[in-house]
Image (cartoon, rainbow, N blue to C red; front, side, top):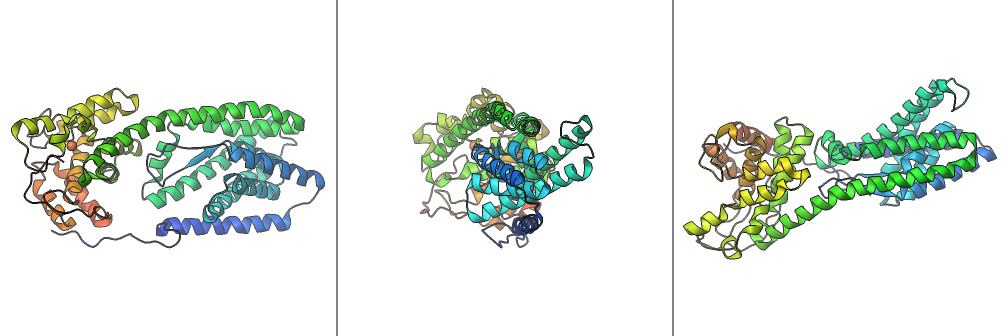
Length: 444
Ligand SMILES: [Fe+2]
């Protein structure tokens, strides 16, 4: 049965999806209105303006010390900076209008990016500062910041600002990428949340120091710098490992022009499929990583076998079949990929037990491996290979349906075919390559 027509491919502004565009308009427009309102109603006094200018400059400087959180997908960058500490101090120290202006102008000056990204950043900062500031000014009845009774409101306002900030940025990335927000949050903050919480509370510390004596604020530069380096080192440890392995996977794909981009697509399809099966974001991310690296064991395959245009003989086929076990062993040595190693090892197992390397069958095959097997087969079918042109999605749909219960887990095939109804998979631009015939069906 051919899949019904695809839905859900819309673009309004800047190549964003329809829902991401709506969020952009809402946040940029709403933030602009708040900024105009703040400018019109702001109380003017030399000391307030001087404090606001100083905090704006400090915020802009701190915003320039930023770290891209681990995203593992191009175009989904979420950046964390120590600027949130200065922004929180501004929310606690300044009148609401000046806090909104300071935080918004500080982030725009510090990040200096494309105007439409600046508009979103400035807008979300204005809204977040308004939310945190309203809670602080309306809720706190204590006289000063250092009063014990003010503590719950200090903490609540700081957390509201930081949470709103994170949710706005993660929200637009989620809507733009089509992945649930929990996936982005898991990826970005799994290892960096302690440093992020640290930045929030250094913001409180700066506000308290400022209220005691302005010069003491300089002392906060030390923990803030330490947090920046902690954040940077945590992120680079993870991203360097992931990047190195992704590069290796891409180099292996590039050895054969027909598999260019294959690993990336398999990772993306496998992740979408995992999410559609209700697998939590953290596990779906592991399945993405395993899909991205599923053929990494091909580094052990001799070129004359991997790139052979004709049919493989028995010895060559046996040699090719070592790649899942080699890939699994390679990944086992990385703590980040320990779970992925099982999925990579099992990606050529079959539901009926006739696969390799362990001849597992049914649910004895790890779920991640069963998901990757379907994504791998679909991408192999819908891309041009030396021996045939890319198959239409409808034909791939038919073949997958045919292999349900023998080659693949029927429940996963059912979920994948349902996913195809709403998600444009297999629609990438195929590499323009000549088709050679006849040739061999090499292991995908
Ligand atoms: Fe493979």
